[in-house]
Structure formats: structure tokens, C-alpha cells
Length: 144
Length: 277
Length: 126
Image 1 (cartoon, rainbow over the protein chains, first blue to last red):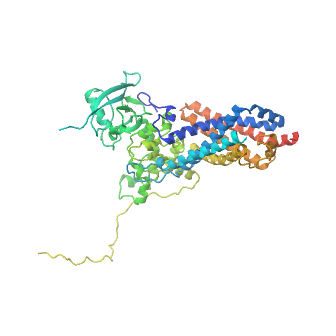
Image 2: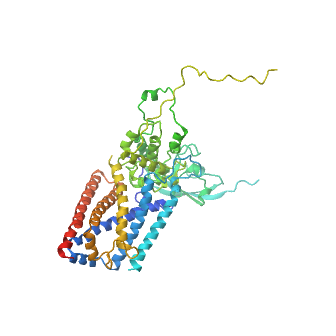
Image 3: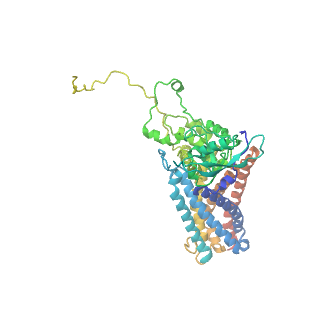
């Protein structure tokens, strides 16, 4: 719809926030970034792993291309991205289906919002994701 | 006798004159403020002393009309509800609410928000229109049923939530926290029977599906309406409806006045204990 | 009705991916600490392990399920991001059709790769 006046939408800057935003805003941005990263990796992954259909030589050749320290680091980043995206995804699925947001209450200042209600869950998400990412790091870089 | 302690504060204002300015610009005005002054009080002082053409919307100056929503030091707030002292800064940066076009200076064009609001039919929708046009009685509603939507009915339509929402920042099709929160306010009102009609609009691209719970709307709401909660509860409603798990209830009935014969078992009044002198 | 249904499937696909991709990550990247479903002695990416999984019905079925769920979930997320950037009507339709075609094509290709492998493994005597 046409709106009169000088346009003033924040655009993509509005996704990233301006520094005075809440913790959940950054979780939202990180969830988007990890999602895009995982999608990009996944599409490549389908092509790489399809080499298995052409036999062991094709498989070994493809594996040689994707070995090397840069690829190892990339794969670890994918693992870490998955750890965050999955655990935060659980939190989002629970919240966006209306659980863990609390029931409608009489608003008495200072307001207790749904954001405050799920803050503990959000902190737990970040900690669990970090633990899983570290565990993966152990497997990737220390124990191999 | 010593007066209230005054201090110098700089009001860093976003100015825009349609027809004259191509882009909005910043302007600084220094004034003396006393403790207890709100940003709105400061704006009036700036207008009186150094910026006579400054334009903004305000009315009740007590946080109930929803006119004075502005971007104050990086957050959407009500100017009348924000003490200059609470900003803890010598610079008060005031701009118009983002995500709305600027008409002039600090005046945003809120019409897109109101249009999205109207599209979601924010009023009781019932089949008994003769009763609604010519009411014979009130609708029954228990206090528990009232609690289900009372919080969301406190919305003053100030637009702060829309300014804070990251989806509204890029997507004009998304209805936004205020219209969606108000749609849920009516959907969860037991006097309303309009869920089916609102569902038509809500199931499409303007519905709550673009909300990803950044939570900013609830954090900036000056009345504690918690639109984020309303939107997630509404998603639950809509998804349960899709899975045919939503409980259907008939809308609240009209409370009729008692009629018929008087009850016979009403006991007689006790004898008077106070005798007249 | 569309967006509501698409979103519900998105959440459902997410749950499926949580289980299946979690398993996949555990097998592939937590093998040193967990060692589940692993080939004793061989790394999960070596040909022996690939053959072992290709011959298992469980792995083939779950790979195809994971492929479908992940493609749907990821491309719906991408669609969300693209549509939130406010494209015009034709671009909107192009995005919808384009992503659907892309997803279906990748699904077909990936399913072929999952199903062709056992035959290849048997034929090459791997």
C-alpha cells in the first residue's frame, strides 16, 4: 500500500539490530546465519556424497578433494552451526507453538513478559550448544 | 530559596521538512532540564525556545493515548513516559519511529499499521447482528474468560512494537505485532465468533508465520501488552485448528434478566433492632 | 491457507531432522567418543563403512527421509528470508516455483544416489 512521506524502513539493518537490542534478537540473527550456512553446505554435501553411487574409486577421489585442514575446519564450523541451530530450533519450536511463553496475566509494572519467561531457556540453549560444539571439537581436532 | 537543580542537556533531533529537505537531518538544541522532566517536556521546551517549527504528535502526556511513540536514544519509547534522567546521558537523541514513513520531523505515517489492523477485523464478530445493533442485555463472561485476553486489550496502538520488530523492518506484507496481537485479543474473547473469518487472513503471508520470536516487541511495549506472547499463542491456536485439535465453543450467550414468579423461599427480614425515639 | 500449512510442515521436518541429523552427526563426528553404528577399525568416511551403511535398509530409508526433510526445511527457511526482503509479484512467484523445482530435483538426485549405491557396492565387490 502506498504510504505518504519519506521512506524510513530499517531494512536488513533491522535484522542485525543496533546494539541496544535484547539477547533474543541476536539468537534470531545467529539462527538465520547458521541456517543459511547449513543449507549451502547441505546442497554441496548432496553432490559430494553422491560419489558413492559410482563406486570406490570415485568415492576415494572425492574424499581426497575434500580432505585437508581447510575442509576440516569448515566441517567443524558446520558441526558447530548445527549444534546451535538444532538446540535453538528446539527452543523456537517449543515457544512458537505457544508453550513456555506463559499465560496472559494482568500487566503490573515492571512488566513480566514472555521474553523474560523464556530467558532461562535461551541461556540454557546457548550453554548446551556450546557444550556440544566443544565435544565435537574434541572429536575433530584432538582425538583423531 | 534554592530552586530545583538544572542541568544542560542536548536534544539531538531528527528534522525533515517535506518539500524542502531531500533527506532527514540531525539538529542539536541545548536546553536546561529539571529533575522529573520527561522527553516530551523537553520537546516542548525546545519548541518554545529554539525550534518553533518542530512537529510531533502528543496528547494525553500520561502514557495512555499512544500518540507520542518515538525513537529515543535508540529504542522506541513513549516520549511522555520517558524521564530524561532515566536515559543517563547528556544527549537525548529523538527520531521518528522507524519502519514508518516520515511525514514531517518526528511524525510517522501510521496508516499502514492501521490498515493491517482493520484487515484483521478488530471487533466482535457474531452471527446475532440484531442483538448487536439493538442490545437487550450484556454477554456472559466469567473472570477466568476475561483473563485470557485482558492483557492484550491494554494496547494503546502506539506503534513502538512495529518499530522494534525485525520482520516489519523489511517486509511490508507482514501485519506486525500490533495487528496480530489484537487479532488474538479478539480470537480469545469468548464473546467473539470470528475466528473462522480472521483465519482466512491469518493463514496467508501477512499472518504470524513471519514472526521468529526476536522478542523486541514485548520488550519495548510501554503498556506490558506482550504482543510476542499473543502471537505465539495465536500460532498454537491456528496450528491446532489445522490439526483439528482446537476446541470449538459457541460464543457467549446474552445474559437475560430474570423473569417469571418470585422465589417463594426467600426468608422474611429480621425484626428491627433500632427503635425510633 | 498455504502459509499456515507450510509452516507446520517446517516444524515437523525440523523435529525429524533433529533426530536423524543428530544421529548422522553422532555417527560421523562423534565416533571417537561414542562409536555408535561404527565399523570397528574403519573411519566412518572410509569406503568400508560407506558400503556397510549402503547395504543396510535402515540407513537407506533414513537417508532418504533425512534428505527430504532437510531439503524442505532448509528451502522453506530460505524462502522466508527471500520473501521478507519484499520482492515484487513476479519475483515472488519465481522464488516459489524456483525453490520447489530445485528442491524436487535435488531430492530425486539424492534418492538415486542413496538407492544406486548398494548396487554399485555389490557390483564393484567393495
